[in-house]
Amino acid sequence: MTKVSLDLIQKLRNMTGLGMLDCKKALEEAGGDLDKAIDHLRKRGAALADKRADRETSQGIIVSYIHPGDQTGVLIELNCETDFVARTQDIKNIAKDIAMHIAACKPIYVSPEQVDQAYLEKEKEIAIEQLKSQGKPAQMIEKIIEGKMSKLASEVSLLKQAFVKDEQKTVEELLKELSAKTGENIRVKRFARFEIGN
Image 1 (tube, helix red, strand yellow):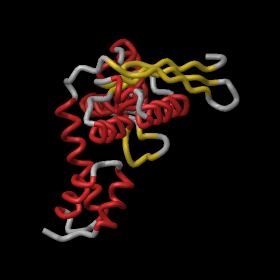
Image 2 (image 1 turned 180 degrees about the vertical axis):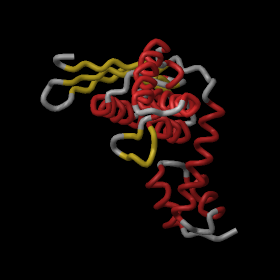
Image 3 (image 1 turned 135 degrees about the vertical axis):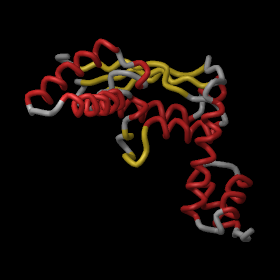
């Protein structure tokens, strides 16, 4: 294994907020390459977050966000496992960021599994008619519709949207990173978006 400097370990720690030992191990495994170490930590964090996904989240916070101009507002409930983590600045910051994302990107549901089937059926009918009017053959329409409906379910789902402040990751990946950092299952339970005139 590569020997890494304390300065490099501290730099990675400042970037990720993880413990010195975790940062040292990741840097050693990445041969001292900071970018590879970050990727390694993200992958490991996502795997750990997946393992925690079925743990109960009975604590959390409710955060409000009012967009400048006072025309759009969001309430969000973010859950975690303990009240200790619920009171941390990391949780408050991510809840505020996700609320701001909701104001900007207008998701309708938390996850694709929650998308209303009646909504999908209506959108499916419209898409089929559009494809028929374009003269697409029936077997092709079926394949196109399957892909369109899957994409639509992701587009209207908060967790699958590209995060407004960093489009390289989804909101779901953002939560998994925080879950890896805190060691707890963290999830968006629900949200409400209000907009004047809608």
